[in-house]
Image (cartoon, rainbow, N blue to C red; front, side, top):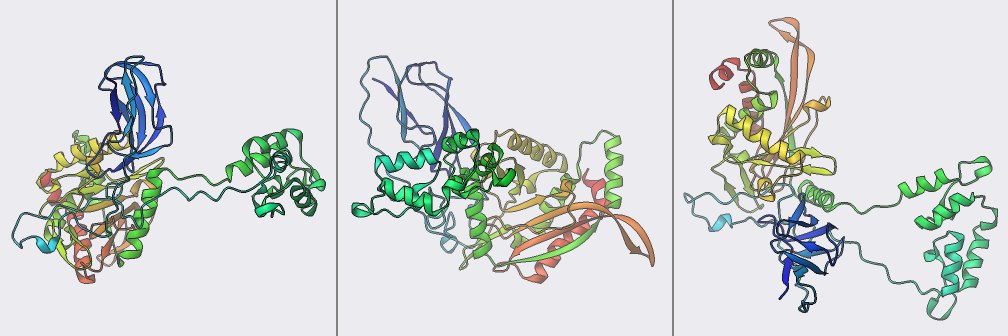
Length: 450
């Protein structure tokens, strides 16, 4: 009997995946461990291997198809075996918005910590904001001759009002539309028109850049580039989650300058001795230490209850070519500076190689967004849903400052905390960023910790 190939469940919170490409086609031999297809989740792209050997008998889900996890997508077996009937699985049930993993109200005050809410690209998306495919427009009623004339003329007939039965667009309607829009006066090269037909570009909407407004191939290519393109699932999730966070969470921001001069000098000494630490490592350690002093920033809320997380699971925002992922350093409060360096470096490397497991992007309690390498003076970040704050780290710049009544040039880095005002008040946020600053400016502390 053929073996069913099912859509895997890459992570605890992944409910559906999209097939990006099939690496095997129907009739191809399949060995155990062969990569059958590549999928896109709301967090990353992954290859899916076969646990069976035989022949790929049937592909049920084509490229671009999105199905729930554990749905059957193909069958592998021996040639000639009958393919079982497959009932399409129901879509994942919608989830209520702003619901924590465990109801804080139901948890005893001194009991084990409530499971952490999970960060960007790892949180189940409420049905009210879940990305979905745009609704297909109703099919236009158009006669075959009218459709053919529209195609040959390289125009879009969707805006033409039909005079036929039930609003059907007739050939005469297309001709009237062309005459009304001055189609006969349009000048276009044969190659440009051929490309417009192939790419379904309406030349009535193209402005020619050639002599006398003549439309050339470059004009059509520009129109092709400007056509709406469906966002990747990752980009849709980023858009939806951050919109939800920014519109439902009362953000406020507190910025302080940090004098990094002494720490940079210390790091240079350490590097000369072979220590691998980056400035980011010191920032991460300073944030972890400060989160233990300010537990409000390591908490979550649904707007009615607040729950505290006893462990620091630190998210590190990593920018990729097609979006943003947030790998999580779990139990960061138990790690030394050297261990934090190793754990963070490994996760960031996996993120950039596209090899993060979905569960390595879940469970965060606070996030750092570091744009220090991008030459920015200051910025604010949007809080990761389910968390109480996020720290934005800007570039270190040579800056004139007043020290002991004199002007001196120092290496200054601005940090900005975005805080959820439902959980954190201004004085607490000010204390938080100033405590981070004090640690980063304390060279003696880092000599002890390193």
